[in-house]
Length: 143
Image 1: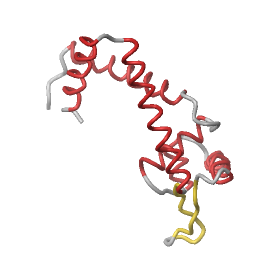
Image 2: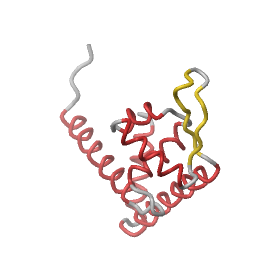
Image 3: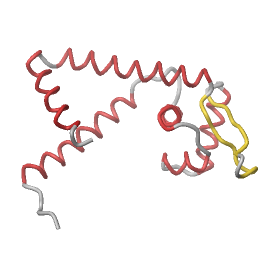
Image 4: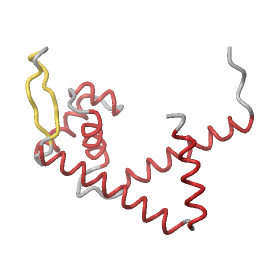
């Protein structure tokens, strides 16, 4: 059995979780070319994780299948996804990004990265940016 974490490590872990959640939420709030936050989230998930089913997407996004069906219908109407029959179950479809969906997801990802870089530049001086980079390198060892 491993020993309990030190108070400093426990506090750092709590603070880190809060900061990552807030930053993730802030990045999700950025404009995404007319898509709703739920549509953007599904687009990002399909871009990151690849093709999926409606049920798996609903589970991953924490919504009911009916809600996911509506989100996917809107993305389909915009030409951002493609549906193909599931070879293992003819009642289901596999949902994947279309070429337009991949381009949109890539552009949105680039936009979020550019926003973050601008905000880091605006809010922190060179010394602080070095500290952030050093901390991220250490955190990278956890991943």
